[in-house]
Image (tube, rainbow, N blue to C red; front, side, top):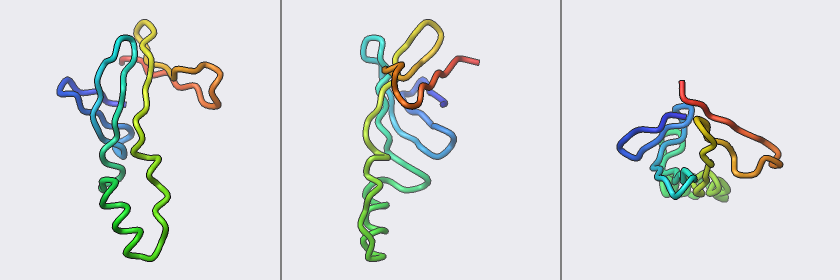
Length: 86
């Protein structure tokens, strides 16, 4: 997860978008997955006669600051992620 000072982020070079702090929470708004925006993905799916079902990739998500780490807000979640500054 790369957080840039200009308020943009990149996750694994695939998901890109904007981020901001809200108290102890880092709030992320994905705008591009792969090389396409939500609208581009939806148009491509519909042009191929498919139902667009990947809208969830563009839903906002958050991580919570705990010391030097960003973690998933719910430690009981199925996947617990911790990002540390390196």
